[in-house]
Image 1 (spheres, one colour):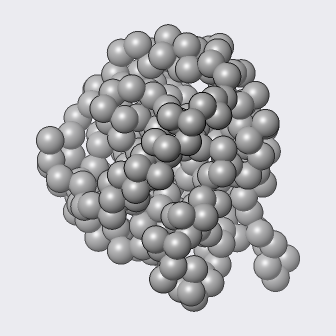
Image 2 (tube, rainbow, N blue to C red):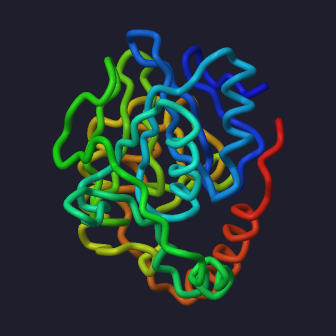
Length: 256
């Protein structure tokens, strides 16, 4: 059974890549936030079935394959509509589609070289977001460009929780920024982080690492106020941090 983080938010097991969450909207419908690597769909559907629900929407924080890899299969196997940022959509045959991609980190591209040669799969996008709006009752999509052009955060004010994708990474309960080389536009990313932090809720569910159920907004504001550092010690730590991050993505998520 999925981990119940707070009433109305579940953290799913059996996936690889990003964290996958199930969240309840104000009308009782349920939505998935991100989908993990390709091959995670069956585990996601088993977890949803154990809770007695079928997702009505798939909410993608961004197009990278570790977050969006199973979106197509889940859309085919359920009645869920696919929601993502307009800036991450491609155009094909007069319609908007998802073409998931490997992140910009060159080391990650080397580690996942096989993923680069996977067939290009186009998944129809049902709702493309280009401004802040409500995507399900009580669930707001907030554009968060920088990591990718169409990155989104999803905020549920009723529950006091935000799903933030790769806006930040959680390492042992401490928040860290997405690395410069992983971002499409690092300057824009840093500005997005500052803006979102101003009104971030007390609970946050990042795409990688442990969710922070208290103090998330305060931690995000503290992080956003720090400058990027090029200190030698930080430069030496980055390869190790990237390696640990890659190994975390490859592990299948187990119950806590």
